[in-house]
Image 1 (spheres, helix red, strand yellow):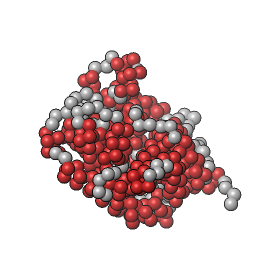
Image 2 (cartoon, rainbow, N blue to C red; image 1 turned 90 degrees about the vertical axis):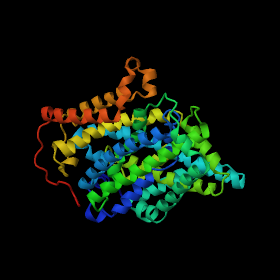
Image 3 (spheres, rainbow, N blue to C red; image 1 turned 180 degrees about the horizontal axis):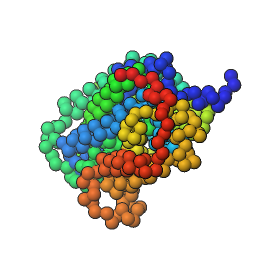
Image 4 (cartoon, rainbow, N blue to C red; image 1 turned 180 degrees about the vertical axis):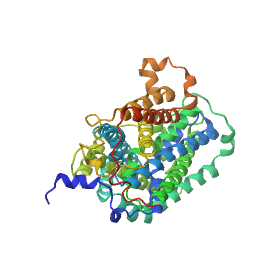
Length: 469
């Protein structure tokens, strides 16, 4: 079959009523599932022992609510307009300005996919070594890449309706219940709850930033899936509730298990993961927990591979199937060499890039344009979203300013070590973390700049395609 440029353009145009087949329950299942996994446990482990269990839970809850609220709002833009996230960024950044966001998103998603492949392979290796005396790490790594790629070829509606709703969601709930029961039944959680943290990195508000960074990392993807929702309002509520609850609880479990395994000793994220795997396997049903984690991480890997292909389509008209295969291969090659030692800094920098970016997007859609985008103009390079040679100066300036505010207030370790001016900043700036200040600055600055620099767009010809609820 001959492929044309129009075919790829059609794949990112507003979803039709016939394509909107994802229920509110299915949306909640998807985002609740994407919020759990060993990488989330590792992130929760980073909060201990600096904060202690009680403050770690509070920081996780605040960060999860903030991040999930942003996730739901951006998802609502996707379900109201029917287009993927990167396409929905065109009015805020300009047609070509959205390419910058796409390039950053492609980079982070390939990295995430590679990490997911590693987690799946580590769990599979532990099971096969325990029961069959065969590790086969690279075999499992290859199979993880193939399975995620096959899922991505199927697309989100197929994965949610045929796999997650019928099977994946329920075994994840069972694994979560087992992890929770074991933590409270075997260990003295009451004693850990009353212990104060040891201090140091992360501070409380840096912990909030870390917890918010996980849902924030999904912001560039959320509309890729919410565009297929049948009910706009229901999908937004389901996204918020399921992600906030799951993210909070898995951060708490990660902090709890880290305190049990390491006490007051500092630890790296890869230590949390590997020791968790080693401690679970010898226990009754431990192998089942690892199997469930493999299944769950496959869903995460699928989302990263699929949305990378969609982000590429925002820049280049190529068939999604071909892009999915290429992305799966690139993530596999990355997984051969990547590690988790810089995981916390990676999360903080992701937060800085995307919190400020989506502060701009939400300001543009909800405050500046009154929830109306011109559906046809989104794909017209000479239309009202062209701005200055394809770039919207207001959006780009507000994005950069918000990112800098995040760096100053969140103060990731890498920045403190390598950026001279950051080392001179007072530590009191971390009092409120980076997420909230960055979001507020980017949002308000964009509103102000849009009034000064952006000419009013003509009345929309296709507003909120497929809106329901």
